[in-house]
Picture 1 (tube, rainbow, N blue to C red):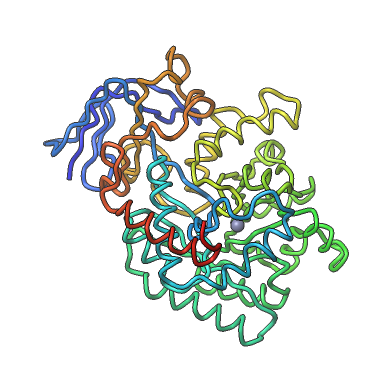
Picture 2 (picture 1 turned 45 degrees about the vertical axis):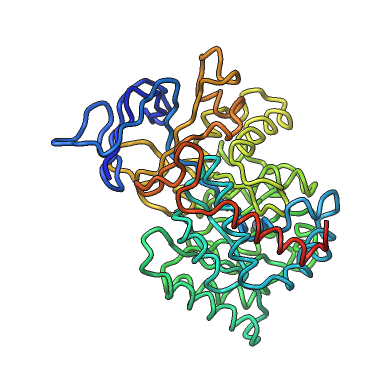
Length: 429
Ligand SMILES: [Zn+2]
C-alpha cells in the first residue's frame, strides 16, 4: 500500500542533528519513498492529514524481556538479588508457552501503542516469542537467553535450542537473531567462549547483561581480578558485534574498552533506578563515541514498556548526576532511542526518517496541552510527551496502530489471558 502524510510536521535528520519542519512524506510499500516531493507516478491508497500531527521514525527499544509483562507490579521495592532469585526466577518456572505468548503480545501492544516499532528481546522458551512477535507484525531482534557451565549438557542444550529457533524463523523478514548468553554470573568463562565462537561462525551478534549491579562488579573483581568488561574482553567476546545491557558500573577504562571494540550499550535508566543499581555513565560513553541505545528492560523491573518515559528519564538523570544541564540533550536522547538503537540492533535502513529507509513510523497528535505553545518539538518529545498521544504506527509499511487501536492484536484476548497467567503465578487478586 502507498501512503501520503500530508503537510505534516516531521522530524528529519540533518547534518547529525534534527530539524522539525512541515513537509509531505510518501510511503511506497515498505519504504519511505519521498520527502517533500512524491516519487514518480505516486498514487496514495490513503492520505493522512498532517494538521496538528507530528511524524517520526519509530522508537527502538534496545533491551527487553517482553514476556515478563506478566510480572508487572508483582515484585516491587525489593533489592536486586531478592528480585531476581526469589521473586522472578521461581515464578518463571511456572510459565508455560501460552503464558509466554500472551505476555509477549501484551508487551507488543504496549510498545506499539507508544510508538515503538522495533525491540531487542531476551526470552526463555523456544519458538514462542518469535511467534507472538510475528503475529503482532513488529520488527524484532530475538535472542533466546542461555546459561551454562563449560560443556555441561544443560547449557549445550540451550545453545542448540537457540540455534534451532533461529533456523525455524530464518525466513521471517522482520526478525533477526542474536546469541543471548544471560550474564557473567549465570554463564562460566568456558561456556561464554563456546557461545562466542558459535556467534563468530554464524556471523551473529552477542546480547548480554553486563555490569548491572554493584554485586556483579565486586564479585568479578574478587573472582577474576577483572571488571566484568575486562573479563569479557579477555574471553574474546568483544571480537563479535556485541550489545551489552545496563553497563551501570562501568569504569573509565571499561568505557575505553567499549570504544576500542565498538561495543554497543543498551541502557535501561528506569530499570536501574527501580532496582537501585545506579545510573550508567552515559555522558562519558557518549563523549567517547560509544554507541548508546536505550531500552525499557522487562516489565518486571520497569513496570512499563513506554520509550517516552525512558527518554524522559535518560534526558534528565544524567543532568542531575553530572550537575550539568547540557549533559544529555533532548536530541542526544532521541538519537539513543532511534538511530543508535538501529545501529546497536544491527537492523538495516531503520532509525531515521529518510528516503530509502524502512517505513517504520509513528504519528502523534500534538493538539494537546503538553505541546503548547509549540516551540521546540524535539524537546517536547523528550520532556513533555507521554506516548499516549500516538495515533498511527507503521512497521515495514503496514499500519499496526490505526486511530490509536491495534490492527493485528486482540486487546481483550490479551488482557484475558495475561490476567489468567497472573492468577496462576501470583494467586487471586
Ligand atoms: Zn534484562
